[in-house]
Length: 442
Image 1 (tube, rainbow, N blue to C red):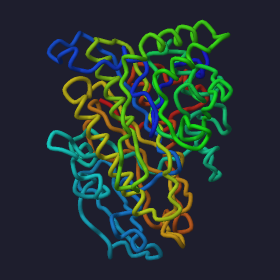
Image 2: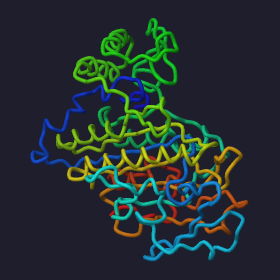
Image 3: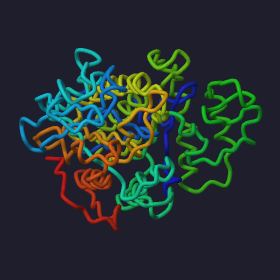
Image 4: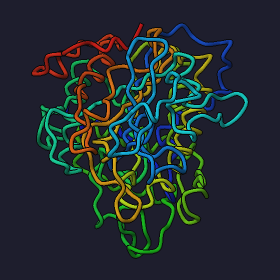
């Protein structure tokens, strides 16, 4: 089964769908947590911050000091008193900038990731401090040329060229080996193609939309003015589908039967970024999906991919990335709170990007494409230990003073995630030989 035949649920600003397959998005009040069925299903939420994001933990920006301080930190993995170095690029005397402490909610984490959204949520820094998070440092692909497309292809395929949907796609290999059916695979996000358009299983084209046209922001009237994709339009599109495969026809019927049960969701507006920029929250959609499946006693593995765009900060990096980190901190905190007493110990969240950014500012207070990056793994099932997995470089180990050389292959993280989920990772990565294990999970 190819990846294109699976059900992908997409969401975004000014679009329909909190979850079109609403029977899998039932509100949690329908089944009380005290009535949870005996299930052992696990949930893998893969968050892809497209554009080359950095700045989570080890590298800039660090609050308002981005542009003057370039944060380069050296940790001794496995020790309780790992030192943190914050140095001005070009200086070789790390002792000037030594700040004692450990990677925790109080140090080593961007300030905007340290404050909980509400009293019943944890910040990302709080998850790191309580053993529910790991920073994996110096992560990179086996090859790198600085191109977004090729770097993302390597991230999502494990190969050096774009092979999405082919037999080389590690996600497709894993899903086929695990015999996952459509309701176990969900795709959420912003600006990644919209309901029934590029990424869905149904072959809808512009010709099917009459006066509507698809663009990168969703369904638009006359190709310019944004318009919500209404229930009636969605049902009409479904009725027009012909020559579908057996799987696609089953999907079409399921969507047609359930679409009236889904409310239109108003866009979630993030005023911090800019007044006209609105984010629907795919994290809250993910929480609904996972809660319903967990409360229903699912024994299967569910994959949820959340893709977020616009992390390519060549300018105004401190301001823009700070707003994005605030969004991630809030929404991931809410996701964790929704699952905390239900299935957080059976859920893993990975936050990844195709590459990092240089440890130097440009003319417009941004950073150009780098190489090595930092990944974040969050779960209630992590092995006890320090919050850092892998290693981070010292100033002397930075290429040219601003490029981080990876020491951990990105595939190693996914390899260990699949292993924890109970699947044979060698089926997904047949040509990858693991190096030193990170031992992320208990």
